[in-house]
Image (tube, rainbow, N blue to C red; front, top):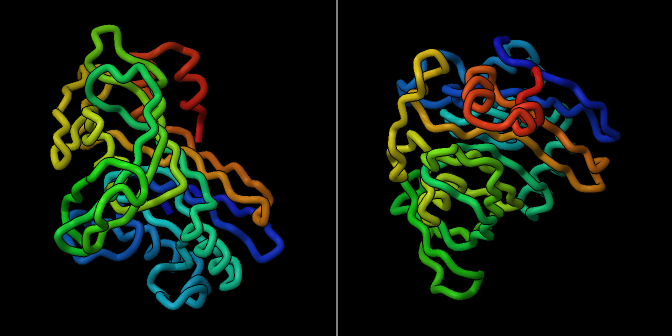
Length: 256
């Protein structure tokens, strides 16, 4: 496998902590966006017993997913009872997830963002946002209430872009990206949600996609209060090292 997998022993079975690279599908996908197998397909090649963990054998016991372009933490259970518990805690919003991202403009104040996400179809390429508190709007068909904390970490000297974290207990498709656009700071390179392309100096690293990394997952007490982290991919560590203070880069750029 060309990604790392750590095994953590819990009372209900082993938990697999997977460092998903960018430009990889989490589960099998019919699109032609990549010639590489999905993370689930590669897991099944190495751990064939994972096909009996859930009702969807092809998902290899994965309990969460990340978008094709997004890197970071994926979790897989090795027993059905552990898989069910993790899925339950995700649906009950008891698992905190933290993402790292680069957004356009100068974000200098913490923002608590909440609202409804909805798409025209169940797998729409883009979702829309209605900002507001729960119950403050008529719920649209296929809508989902979400909320997150957008925390500035550093801003470039010219104010061109910001390095921020987003913490959330909710999880909807494109939540982080759509909310970023809604508050006026879309992800750099995320054309779908209004982000502008940015040509980093060739001696650093020119990116051709948006910068979004699932950095940390914090599990509840019934799962030992585990705090799981995957440092930034090396190609993006170069950007953070170059543009931001050493205190920022040392915190998020440890070796995988």
